[in-house]
Image 1 (spheres, rainbow, N blue to C red):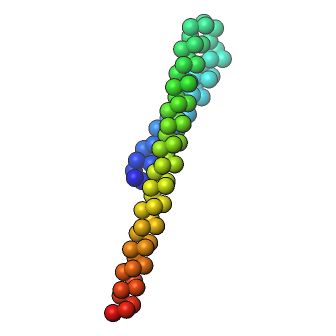
Image 2 (tube, helix red, strand yellow):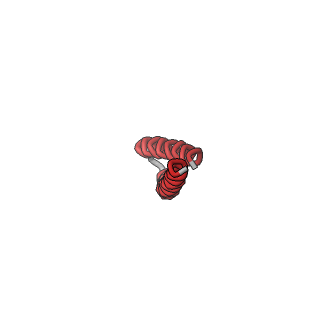
Image 3 (tube, helix red, strand yellow):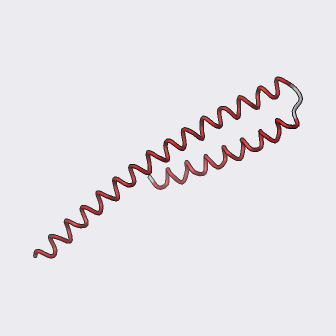
Length: 84
């Protein structure tokens, strides 16, 4: 899960970087079709960033649940050891 989270973070950074580059290019473009194409790319990248954010939130919840589960198991083990 942590590896997937790191991969998603990298993908998000790349997408945000590409969005910035496209926004710079839009300022220099004059062709309507070129502008439209860049805007479509930006929209798709923004959608990808939103998907990654949702995935990150889901992974964070799963990680928190796993950590809580591990803490409970550790507490049970310590309790057994102290009662022996």
